[in-house]
Image 1 (tube, rainbow, N blue to C red):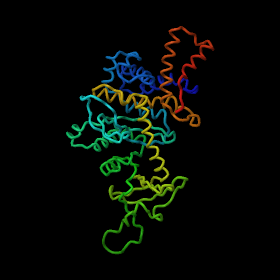
Image 2: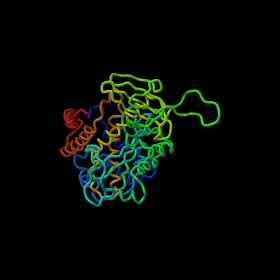
Image 3: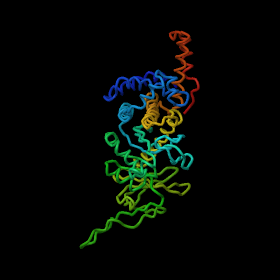
Length: 409
């Protein structure tokens, strides 16, 4: 923790306090519990189990279990946090992630795809809906929603894709106030996902298959007489595009970028594509936006920023205990998942986003966690020994202890 962030410890309490006071649904016991829990969660040096939280915090194990069983409005909390900390230009991102979990009686337990191991594994799946700050280039969580088990989906006559659509649609009131575009990876390049989202009011930016079924728009002369005017022309050969219709708009050392409006047969609508031709390998990629008026530079930038949600999930798994929950209650699981994601956002807001942009450097969740643990132990030791922090020599030692084990991001 650098000296510029030395007062971030008190900022966490003040920021959480300010946001909770804006939420009318928060009760006084829940208010006290959440302030205490965020401070403990940021610096916990062991697995994030309820027993360990009770060992380092002010609440006993039973009290923590009772509070975690209650519903907390993480959506409103995170929305206020984003408004307090982020710039105005925002986009949404959605991505499901695998959560390792053992046992046989946890809700939603089943075989889910693990991207890191490239195979299906026993565990849980969490759909993460996040807001990406375009200017800062970082993602802040809005809501994490666990994917129901196969049996529950079958009872609803749903597929996993139906559930993902429901996650996004259920958060539309919060999303529509902040964003216009939803970015997703190439897995979601499906009519069954994109068209319902577009119909609900959001535009989608994603990646297309290399053999995408596209047609050029017809711009030639109109024939006289009866019948429907010709709307579409030849099929787009994705390996060799017509560069008179899909025009170059940017070039750098690695790739040449082209863009144009075409007709997607799979989606049955006009879309704007960004065609990326890699200069060294000769390979290509195709990005898509359902908003044909969006400039190609923004499509390229927004899709690249989609990857920030991966860093958010990574930090929550490695440093905030996203995969550590041992509870078997659906409410406790939901609370734990969202607490882990929101803790990363709190750390960003108090130690990174509040700094001038030129002074930020890379964000390191590890440094934040180490610093909070150092403060917990340093305060405990110095107060037990009765050391006076007004003494310059002791104060210098105090600050040195806070920076123990700091690493670059």
